Length: 155
Image (cartoon, rainbow, N blue to C red):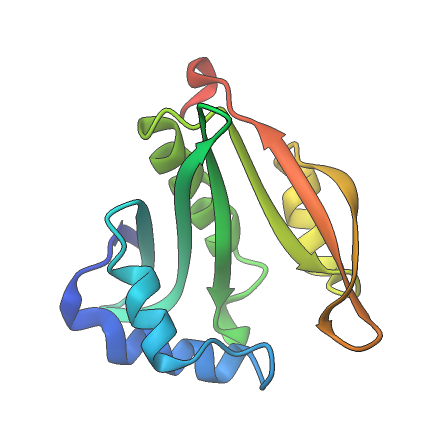
């Protein structure tokens, strides 16, 4: 598996993965996805196998009370390639990008029913900080996970 940063030729293939991984209303719109991957305050990592994109992850960072913090927008892996370490490696890549931007914390929302993603985040040292009810849709809560990024733990 090859892990690399996004380039502008990747958008169509990347959005095709978004289309497979999420249904409305959770699916990002194409225009919004274009803004995310083009953000100067973020990084998008691509997972490729045999020259074909099989997953990606997007992180953005901003200042919060004077300290840079990072937010994981999404980690997506095609169903046939899940449980083989791509999501874990993509998470490591975006954490390293956040560290490079001097982010002290990284956080995210995850569907309370997405057990696989919750296991991934917990295995990487994220802790549940709370719940946001009706985040994804009425009756579908998000768990809020966060992790302190220590610059000495960069991979």
